[in-house]
Length: 121
Length: 107
Image (cartoon, rainbow over all chains, first blue to last red; front, side, top):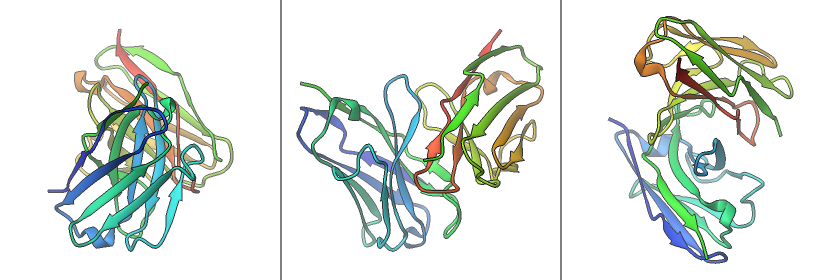
């Protein structure tokens, strides 16, 4: 079945960088756009970033634009979120998720278990 | 950006009750709306997409309706496993946005 497994979270000081990874399996990775969505502790969901099935199109939330980068590795079925210039407000659980249907609307299904990033001095 | 406003923010209900959650978009989004369920400590789960299409495996007591700016999620015959937080999400335009969530609690 489809599986998404995030890793790379941890505690980091403000201004530093962190790279999150998402290992995908159980589907034709090269056919699906991928997203990162985050959730601050006790708060709601916030979409963060998108990368198209072929890696040619990227979108970012205004809150992370210019600081975060998204990439994918089709050989290893991985998605990455490079987070630079981290701020305390970036503290959240970060979820990796795929679009439900290849070339379809951006419905998120399924989601990984999430990885916690804490930005703390 | 399209702002999504959910109401109520929380609701108390009993087993067997019918619960209705509303989601309003700040501009028309056709039927480009999904609903997710999230239980404590777990990742969200897709329930409904395209405003009214039930995701595979989701019980038929869940239903969605609406188009344009006003949408509803209805849970008929509330079951113990339905106590959770529910989010709407618009996919009409990037930037993708979520509602603030509605927590369904046990009365």
